[in-house]
Image (cartoon, rainbow, N blue to C red; front, side, top):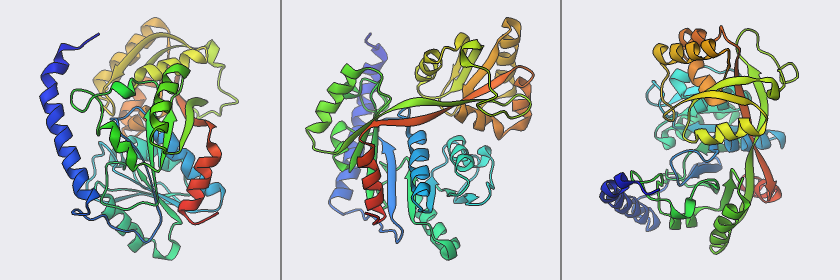
Amino acid sequence: MHNPLSILLRPAALGYRVIVQLRNTLFDRQLLPAWKSPVPIVSIGNLSAGGTGKTPLVDWVVKYYLSIGCKPAIISRGYRRESKGVQLVSDGHKVLLSSRESGDETAMLAWNNPDAIVIVAKKRKEGVKYLIKHFAARMPSVIILDDAFQHRQIQRELNIAIINASEPFLKARMLPEGRMREPLKNLSRADLIVLNKIDDPEKADAIERKIKERGTPLIKARVAIAELVCFSGAFISSEEAPPLTSISALAFAGISSPQSFLDSLGKEGVTIAAHRFFYDHEPYSAKKLTEIFREAESKGLSLITTEKDYFRMLGHPELIRIITARPCYYLKIKTDIFEGKEILQSMLRKAVAMQ
Protein backbone atom coordinates (compact mmCIF):
# COMPACT_ATOMS: atom_id res chain seq x y z
CA MET A 1 0.00 0.00 0.00
CA HIS A 2 1.31 3.42 -0.92
CA ASN A 3 2.13 5.63 2.02
CA PRO A 4 1.06 9.25 1.30
CA LEU A 5 3.60 10.49 3.85
CA SER A 6 6.41 9.27 1.57
CA ILE A 7 5.56 11.98 -0.97
CA LEU A 8 6.08 14.64 1.68
CA LEU A 9 9.42 13.11 2.65
CA ARG A 10 10.68 12.72 -0.91
CA PRO A 11 12.31 16.18 -1.19
CA ALA A 12 14.26 15.52 2.01
CA ALA A 13 15.28 12.10 0.64
CA LEU A 14 16.49 13.68 -2.60
CA GLY A 15 18.48 16.26 -0.65
CA TYR A 16 20.01 13.54 1.51
CA ARG A 17 20.92 11.55 -1.60
CA VAL A 18 22.75 14.55 -3.10
CA ILE A 19 24.75 15.08 0.09
CA VAL A 20 25.67 11.38 0.32
CA GLN A 21 26.78 11.22 -3.29
CA LEU A 22 28.81 14.42 -3.01
CA ARG A 23 30.63 13.05 0.02
CA ASN A 24 31.32 9.74 -1.75
CA THR A 25 32.59 11.55 -4.83
CA LEU A 26 35.07 13.49 -2.69
CA PHE A 27 36.39 10.21 -1.27
CA ASP A 28 36.43 8.51 -4.69
CA ARG A 29 38.54 11.34 -6.12
CA GLN A 30 40.73 11.34 -3.00
CA LEU A 31 39.83 14.94 -2.23
CA LEU A 32 38.90 13.59 1.20
CA PRO A 33 41.69 11.32 2.45
CA ALA A 34 41.29 7.79 3.80
CA TRP A 35 43.78 6.88 6.53
CA LYS A 36 45.81 3.65 6.30
CA SER A 37 45.87 1.61 9.52
CA PRO A 38 49.01 -0.40 10.37
CA VAL A 39 46.68 -3.23 11.43
CA PRO A 40 44.54 -4.96 8.76
CA ILE A 41 40.95 -3.68 8.67
CA VAL A 42 37.80 -5.66 7.88
CA SER A 43 34.63 -3.56 7.65
CA ILE A 44 31.14 -5.03 8.01
CA GLY A 45 28.18 -2.78 7.24
CA ASN A 46 25.08 -2.22 5.16
CA LEU A 47 23.31 0.24 2.91
CA SER A 48 20.04 0.22 4.85
CA ALA A 49 19.32 1.51 8.34
CA GLY A 50 19.48 -1.65 10.43
CA GLY A 51 17.67 -4.97 10.25
CA THR A 52 20.20 -6.81 8.08
CA GLY A 53 21.57 -9.21 10.71
CA LYS A 54 24.87 -7.38 10.91
CA THR A 55 25.71 -8.06 14.56
CA PRO A 56 25.40 -11.87 14.29
CA LEU A 57 27.67 -11.73 11.21
CA VAL A 58 30.25 -9.65 13.11
CA ASP A 59 30.07 -12.30 15.85
CA TRP A 60 30.59 -15.05 13.24
CA VAL A 61 33.64 -13.31 11.77
CA VAL A 62 35.19 -12.72 15.21
CA LYS A 63 34.74 -16.38 16.12
CA TYR A 64 36.20 -17.50 12.79
CA TYR A 65 39.32 -15.40 13.28
CA LEU A 66 39.75 -16.78 16.80
CA SER A 67 39.37 -20.33 15.45
CA ILE A 68 42.31 -19.87 13.05
CA GLY A 69 44.60 -18.28 15.64
CA CYS A 70 44.05 -14.61 14.82
CA LYS A 71 43.55 -12.07 17.59
CA PRO A 72 40.64 -9.80 16.56
CA ALA A 73 39.61 -6.43 17.89
CA ILE A 74 36.20 -4.86 17.36
CA ILE A 75 35.63 -1.14 16.97
CA SER A 76 32.03 0.00 17.05
CA ARG A 77 30.27 3.32 17.29
CA GLY A 78 28.31 2.09 20.30
CA TYR A 79 24.95 3.40 19.12
CA ARG A 80 22.85 5.11 21.82
CA ARG A 81 25.50 4.68 24.52
CA GLU A 82 25.60 7.19 27.34
CA SER A 83 29.40 7.55 27.34
CA LYS A 84 31.40 9.92 25.13
CA GLY A 85 34.63 9.68 23.17
CA VAL A 86 36.78 6.55 22.90
CA GLN A 87 35.97 3.90 25.51
CA LEU A 88 37.50 0.48 26.15
CA VAL A 89 34.64 -1.99 26.50
CA SER A 90 36.76 -5.14 26.85
CA ASP A 91 40.52 -5.59 27.08
CA GLY A 92 40.33 -9.14 25.74
CA HIS A 93 40.25 -10.57 29.26
CA LYS A 94 37.43 -8.76 31.03
CA VAL A 95 34.36 -6.74 30.04
CA LEU A 96 34.81 -3.31 31.60
CA LEU A 97 31.66 -1.38 30.63
CA SER A 98 27.94 -1.99 30.87
CA SER A 99 25.60 -1.80 27.89
CA ARG A 100 24.53 1.63 29.14
CA GLU A 101 28.09 2.88 28.56
CA SER A 102 28.92 0.84 25.46
CA GLY A 103 25.62 0.28 23.64
CA ASP A 104 23.56 -2.91 23.61
CA GLU A 105 25.02 -4.55 20.49
CA THR A 106 28.60 -3.74 21.50
CA ALA A 107 28.08 -5.15 25.00
CA MET A 108 26.61 -8.30 23.46
CA LEU A 109 29.64 -8.74 21.18
CA ALA A 110 32.03 -8.20 24.10
CA TRP A 111 30.34 -10.73 26.40
CA ASN A 112 30.03 -13.32 23.62
CA ASN A 113 33.70 -12.93 22.59
CA PRO A 114 35.74 -12.53 25.80
CA ASP A 115 39.06 -13.02 23.95
CA ALA A 116 38.47 -10.04 21.67
CA ILE A 117 39.40 -6.44 22.45
CA VAL A 118 36.33 -4.24 22.03
CA ILE A 119 36.34 -0.44 21.72
CA VAL A 120 33.59 2.10 21.11
CA ALA A 121 34.41 5.28 19.24
CA LYS A 122 32.17 7.52 17.16
CA LYS A 123 35.27 8.44 15.15
CA ARG A 124 36.60 4.99 14.24
CA LYS A 125 40.01 6.38 13.34
CA GLU A 126 40.45 7.60 16.93
CA GLY A 127 39.43 4.13 18.11
CA VAL A 128 42.12 2.50 15.96
CA LYS A 129 44.75 4.96 17.21
CA TYR A 130 43.71 4.25 20.82
CA LEU A 131 44.10 0.53 20.15
CA ILE A 132 47.57 0.96 18.63
CA LYS A 133 48.72 3.12 21.54
CA HIS A 134 47.34 1.06 24.44
CA PHE A 135 47.82 -2.46 23.07
CA ALA A 136 51.25 -2.17 21.47
CA ALA A 137 52.49 -5.12 23.56
CA ARG A 138 49.73 -7.42 22.30
CA MET A 139 48.62 -5.93 19.01
CA PRO A 140 45.60 -7.64 17.43
CA SER A 141 45.96 -9.43 14.11
CA VAL A 142 42.92 -7.72 12.61
CA ILE A 143 40.49 -4.93 13.44
CA ILE A 144 36.81 -5.43 12.62
CA LEU A 145 34.93 -2.19 12.04
CA ASP A 146 31.30 -2.71 13.02
CA ASP A 147 28.72 -0.87 10.88
CA ALA A 148 31.33 1.04 8.90
CA PHE A 149 30.31 0.81 5.23
CA GLN A 150 29.64 4.56 5.25
CA HIS A 151 32.71 5.33 7.40
CA ARG A 152 35.20 5.99 4.61
CA GLN A 153 37.89 7.79 6.62
CA ILE A 154 39.77 4.48 7.07
CA GLN A 155 41.05 2.22 4.30
CA ARG A 156 40.17 -1.43 4.64
CA GLU A 157 41.54 -4.71 3.37
CA LEU A 158 38.05 -6.18 3.09
CA ASN A 159 34.77 -4.29 2.74
CA ILE A 160 31.68 -6.44 3.42
CA ALA A 161 28.14 -5.20 2.74
CA ILE A 162 25.03 -7.02 4.00
CA ILE A 163 21.64 -7.02 2.30
CA ASN A 164 18.40 -8.09 3.96
CA ALA A 165 16.76 -10.38 1.38
CA SER A 166 13.42 -10.23 3.19
CA GLU A 167 12.97 -6.51 2.45
CA PRO A 168 12.02 -4.91 -0.92
CA PHE A 169 15.66 -4.01 -1.42
CA LEU A 170 15.55 -3.29 -5.17
CA LYS A 171 12.73 -0.75 -4.68
CA ALA A 172 14.01 0.75 -1.43
CA ARG A 173 14.15 4.53 -1.07
CA MET A 174 16.58 6.86 0.63
CA LEU A 175 16.20 8.17 4.17
CA PRO A 176 13.94 9.65 5.48
CA GLU A 177 11.42 8.46 2.87
CA GLY A 178 12.75 4.91 3.10
CA ARG A 179 15.50 3.04 4.93
CA MET A 180 18.45 3.39 2.54
CA ARG A 181 21.59 5.20 3.71
CA GLU A 182 23.04 5.13 0.19
CA PRO A 183 21.84 4.41 -3.37
CA LEU A 184 22.10 0.79 -4.56
CA LYS A 185 24.84 1.65 -7.04
CA ASN A 186 27.21 2.27 -4.12
CA LEU A 187 27.38 -1.47 -3.56
CA SER A 188 30.26 -1.21 -6.05
CA ARG A 189 32.49 -0.31 -3.08
CA ALA A 190 31.90 -3.73 -1.52
CA ASP A 191 34.47 -6.49 -1.97
CA LEU A 192 31.93 -9.06 -0.83
CA ILE A 193 28.14 -8.99 -0.46
CA VAL A 194 26.22 -11.10 2.05
CA LEU A 195 22.63 -11.76 1.04
CA ASN A 196 21.15 -12.44 4.47
CA LYS A 197 17.81 -13.37 6.05
CA ILE A 198 16.82 -15.46 3.05
CA ASP A 199 13.34 -16.93 3.55
CA ASP A 200 11.77 -16.25 0.15
CA PRO A 201 13.93 -17.87 -2.58
CA GLU A 202 12.13 -16.03 -5.40
CA LYS A 203 12.75 -12.61 -3.87
CA ALA A 204 16.35 -13.57 -3.04
CA ASP A 205 16.95 -14.77 -6.62
CA ALA A 206 15.85 -11.39 -8.02
CA ILE A 207 18.31 -9.57 -5.75
CA GLU A 208 21.04 -12.09 -6.55
CA ARG A 209 20.63 -11.58 -10.31
CA LYS A 210 20.96 -7.81 -9.86
CA ILE A 211 24.09 -8.20 -7.73
CA LYS A 212 25.72 -10.65 -10.12
CA GLU A 213 25.53 -8.00 -12.84
CA ARG A 214 28.17 -6.15 -10.82
CA GLY A 215 30.49 -9.16 -10.60
CA THR A 216 30.93 -8.81 -6.83
CA PRO A 217 31.36 -12.10 -4.92
CA LEU A 218 28.17 -13.03 -3.08
CA ILE A 219 27.38 -15.45 -0.29
CA LYS A 220 23.98 -16.52 1.03
CA ALA A 221 22.95 -16.69 4.66
CA ARG A 222 19.96 -16.86 6.95
CA VAL A 223 19.22 -16.26 10.60
CA ALA A 224 19.15 -19.41 12.71
CA ILE A 225 18.19 -20.08 16.31
CA ALA A 226 21.23 -20.64 18.52
CA GLU A 227 19.56 -21.24 21.89
CA LEU A 228 16.93 -20.06 24.32
CA VAL A 229 18.36 -18.58 27.52
CA CYS A 230 16.42 -18.11 30.75
CA PHE A 231 17.30 -14.96 32.71
CA SER A 232 14.68 -15.07 35.44
CA GLY A 233 16.47 -16.67 38.37
CA ALA A 234 19.51 -18.83 37.65
CA PHE A 235 21.16 -18.78 34.25
CA ILE A 236 20.44 -22.08 32.52
CA SER A 237 22.02 -23.73 29.52
CA SER A 238 20.23 -24.67 26.32
CA GLU A 239 20.10 -28.30 27.52
CA GLU A 240 18.09 -27.27 30.58
CA ALA A 241 15.76 -24.85 28.82
CA PRO A 242 12.20 -26.02 28.17
CA PRO A 243 11.31 -27.02 24.61
CA LEU A 244 10.28 -23.99 22.61
CA THR A 245 7.01 -25.68 21.63
CA SER A 246 5.92 -25.72 25.28
CA ILE A 247 6.17 -21.94 25.72
CA SER A 248 3.29 -19.49 25.41
CA ALA A 249 4.69 -16.00 25.60
CA LEU A 250 4.47 -12.27 25.26
CA ALA A 251 7.26 -11.23 22.89
CA PHE A 252 8.74 -7.76 23.25
CA ALA A 253 11.66 -6.00 21.60
CA GLY A 254 13.06 -2.70 20.37
CA ILE A 255 14.51 -3.73 17.01
CA SER A 256 14.25 -2.56 13.41
CA SER A 257 12.72 -5.82 12.08
CA PRO A 258 10.31 -7.17 14.71
CA GLN A 259 8.53 -9.40 12.21
CA SER A 260 11.77 -11.32 11.69
CA PHE A 261 11.88 -11.98 15.44
CA LEU A 262 8.27 -13.23 15.44
CA ASP A 263 8.92 -15.39 12.39
CA SER A 264 11.94 -17.00 14.07
CA LEU A 265 9.89 -17.82 17.17
CA GLY A 266 6.99 -19.11 15.10
CA LYS A 267 9.19 -21.43 13.07
CA GLU A 268 10.42 -22.98 16.31
CA GLY A 269 6.90 -23.59 17.56
CA VAL A 270 6.67 -20.88 20.22
CA THR A 271 3.12 -19.66 20.77
CA ILE A 272 3.11 -15.85 20.71
CA ALA A 273 -0.07 -14.82 22.48
CA ALA A 274 0.82 -11.11 22.59
CA HIS A 275 3.61 -8.77 21.60
CA ARG A 276 4.91 -5.27 22.31
CA PHE A 277 7.41 -3.60 20.01
CA PHE A 278 9.37 -0.37 20.25
CA TYR A 279 11.74 1.60 18.04
CA ASP A 280 15.18 0.14 17.33
CA HIS A 281 17.51 0.74 20.34
CA GLU A 282 14.70 2.55 22.18
CA PRO A 283 15.60 2.81 25.90
CA TYR A 284 13.40 0.89 28.30
CA SER A 285 11.75 2.62 31.23
CA ALA A 286 10.19 1.35 34.46
CA LYS A 287 6.77 2.30 33.05
CA LYS A 288 7.20 0.29 29.83
CA LEU A 289 8.52 -2.81 31.57
CA THR A 290 5.85 -2.65 34.28
CA GLU A 291 3.15 -2.56 31.60
CA ILE A 292 4.75 -5.52 29.81
CA PHE A 293 5.01 -7.49 33.07
CA ARG A 294 1.41 -6.80 34.09
CA GLU A 295 0.07 -7.89 30.72
CA ALA A 296 2.10 -11.12 30.83
CA GLU A 297 1.01 -11.76 34.42
CA SER A 298 -2.67 -11.18 33.67
CA LYS A 299 -2.56 -13.60 30.72
CA GLY A 300 -0.31 -16.19 32.40
CA LEU A 301 2.42 -15.77 29.78
CA SER A 302 6.17 -16.10 29.80
CA LEU A 303 8.25 -13.21 28.41
CA ILE A 304 10.58 -13.55 25.44
CA THR A 305 12.84 -10.87 24.02
CA THR A 306 15.93 -10.67 21.81
CA GLU A 307 19.48 -11.03 23.03
CA LYS A 308 20.14 -7.41 22.10
CA ASP A 309 17.20 -6.25 24.20
CA TYR A 310 18.38 -8.37 27.12
CA PHE A 311 21.76 -6.66 27.08
CA ARG A 312 20.09 -3.25 26.79
CA MET A 313 18.11 -3.98 29.94
CA LEU A 314 21.14 -5.51 31.66
CA GLY A 315 22.74 -2.07 31.77
CA HIS A 316 19.90 -1.05 34.10
CA PRO A 317 19.60 -3.83 36.73
CA GLU A 318 16.86 -1.94 38.54
CA LEU A 319 14.71 -2.22 35.41
CA ILE A 320 15.35 -5.85 34.57
CA ARG A 321 14.19 -6.86 38.06
CA ILE A 322 10.71 -5.57 37.22
CA ILE A 323 9.97 -8.43 34.79
CA THR A 324 11.88 -11.37 36.27
CA ALA A 325 9.09 -12.48 38.58
CA ARG A 326 7.73 -14.12 35.40
CA PRO A 327 9.63 -16.75 33.38
CA CYS A 328 11.85 -14.64 31.11
CA TYR A 329 13.89 -15.75 28.13
CA TYR A 330 15.99 -14.20 25.44
CA LEU A 331 16.58 -15.75 22.06
CA LYS A 332 20.14 -16.07 20.81
CA ILE A 333 20.42 -16.10 17.03
CA LYS A 334 23.33 -16.84 14.75
CA THR A 335 24.29 -16.44 11.11
CA ASP A 336 23.90 -19.63 9.08
CA ILE A 337 25.96 -19.31 5.89
CA PHE A 338 24.59 -22.01 3.59
CA GLU A 339 26.23 -20.97 0.33
CA GLY A 340 29.69 -19.49 -0.22
CA LYS A 341 31.16 -20.01 3.25
CA GLU A 342 34.51 -20.98 1.72
CA ILE A 343 34.57 -17.70 -0.23
CA LEU A 344 34.08 -15.69 2.96
CA GLN A 345 36.69 -17.67 4.87
CA SER A 346 39.20 -17.30 2.04
CA MET A 347 38.68 -13.52 1.83
CA LEU A 348 38.95 -13.15 5.61
CA ARG A 349 42.27 -15.04 5.59
CA LYS A 350 43.53 -13.00 2.64
CA ALA A 351 42.72 -9.77 4.53
CA VAL A 352 45.26 -10.75 7.20
CA ALA A 353 47.66 -12.31 4.64
CA MET A 354 46.88 -15.90 5.74
CA GLN A 355 46.47 -17.98 2.56
